[in-house]
Length: 217
Image (cartoon, rainbow, N blue to C red; front, side, top):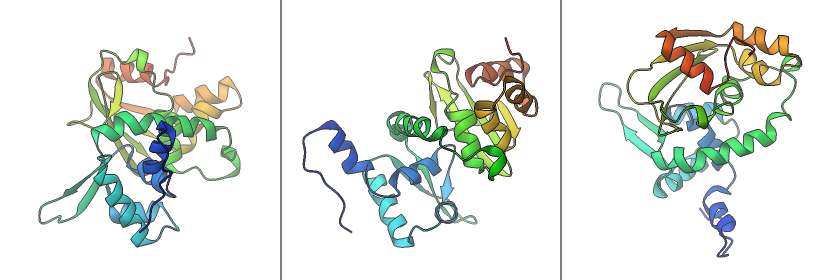
């Protein structure tokens, strides 16, 4: 399959040579927060042709942004994850694009909110690296039946490492409302409906890093 190449010695053009193809950023978006099987990606990317998805995954694997792991029997499935380079170099791009599109989302009350949108708005975009410099922990976020897993290490988001220090349960609508609620009262009420499981000090550290405190101060 022919891919786009701008043939320009420019950092933006070079980046677009890798990331500028249709569906590429959305595939990487799907891999934020945990491993995905091929079928999971197909389900979350309606409209993508199966051969195109395979081609995009192969290209992203070849440039080192996506890792492929073949699980042993009896599972016998192939799963895809962001590589460490993907977390370090691509996630900031996804965050910037998401910030650009955040206030263009349909109002929460007028349309269903996907678990992924809840994770992006409530967790990924809220991450404050200045509060995470000394934090080393993994987390699990359960959103309307979908699980997201990730870690904080070296002051940045990364792939999950081991068991989660904190497990969060929330609805996608509440996570979006924590950022886009029309009033402070609505935002705080949404935060109050989010549940956290773990040691209290770990919970408080996570709340601070992701601006999910139930204390308005």
